[in-house]
Image (cartoon, rainbow, N blue to C red):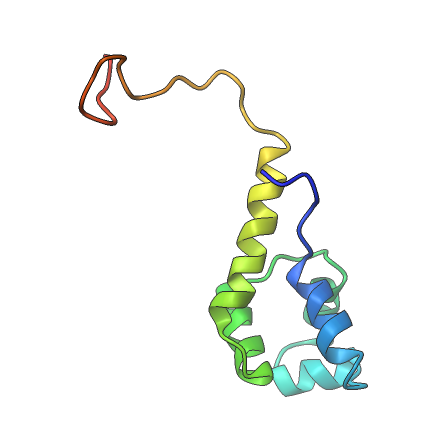
Length: 104
């Protein structure tokens, strides 16, 4: 996993979309039909980007919702790897031709 923490999609929305277009959080929230508090939490990295929000932002920015969700997924995975369990046993038996064969 990458050592650099991925950018939160809300931060990207704020820095690369809203600020350059001089759109306030209040104005953007109105255009997205969500509360100002909801958008503020997202752009300040205090809330995750949901699939519903990805669709809203995708429509408002003319960008694929999948690209917004991918950013959130990368961030989620990075965060999860920071607390990765260490004692996981592999499912594949040595000398086995079948993947995911249980050793039980």
